[in-house]
View 1: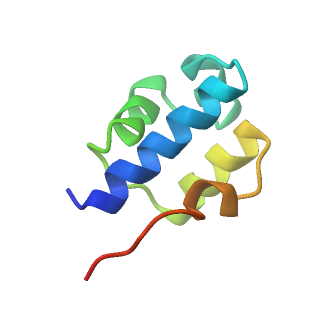
View 2: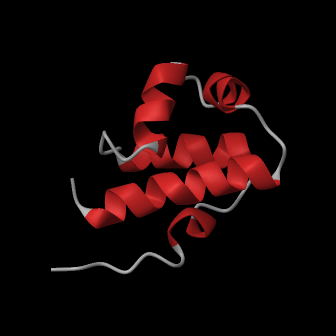
Length: 74
């Protein structure tokens, strides 16, 4: 997988920890299976924009917070 996918997952995990949330709580609030969220966090699965928006909503952050420091490589 591309490095950006891995970094996005790291950012999601970082926000979850910063907010003191549990992965299963975020998955529930994002209306997704916890195993799928774990795959996104580990960078093993690429997500659609709609999924990223649901995760941002569940984390109560602006979607820009998920991608603001990502460096896109060609």
